[in-house]
Amino acid sequence: AWRKMTQLIQCPACGEAQNPGDTCRNKECGSSLKDIKSPLAGLRFHDLRHHAITELAESQASDSTIMALAGHVSRKMLEHYSHVRQEAKRDAVNGLSAKVPRRPAKRGYDTNHDTNHACADGVPAQVIENMVGTRRLELLTSTVSR
Image (cartoon, rainbow, N blue to C red; front, side, top):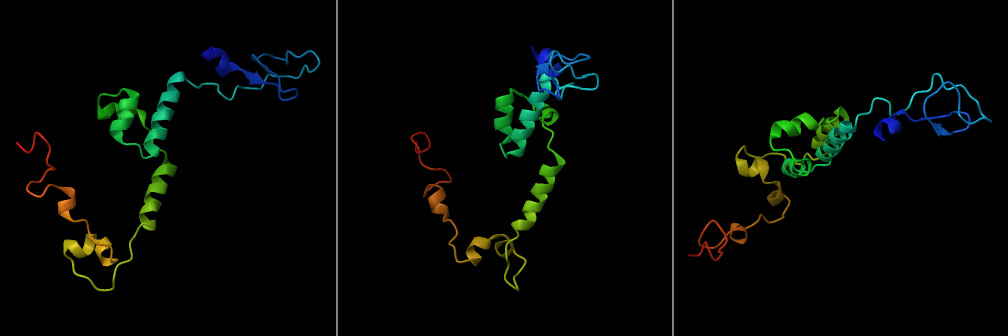
């Protein structure tokens, strides 16, 4: 079925799908098909796997998600199957320039001033007590509290 699908051609005159040959099988048409090649010629079934994994990688799916869907055990296999296109790489780099935050005129070089832009805009930073338990660095659960 795969071989038939990848060899199937369409007559340019009548539009009938058919196997390759010298002339159209439609007796009323009879157009020459000698130079017509299937648009899917050379497509291997496994190429679809490469394409699907590449699309997942470009859609910002996590590596662990892609590996789970594809059944990959190692990162090396993921790299073998994902072929991120040049256009996607270019879009990613262009995205960096679009996300450059506006910085105040004069600031220091310490970490707070260079990376904590949310505080500069008047948005309060997250309070660490909201992210972790009050007595520990982990939220209290039945196993941690003992």
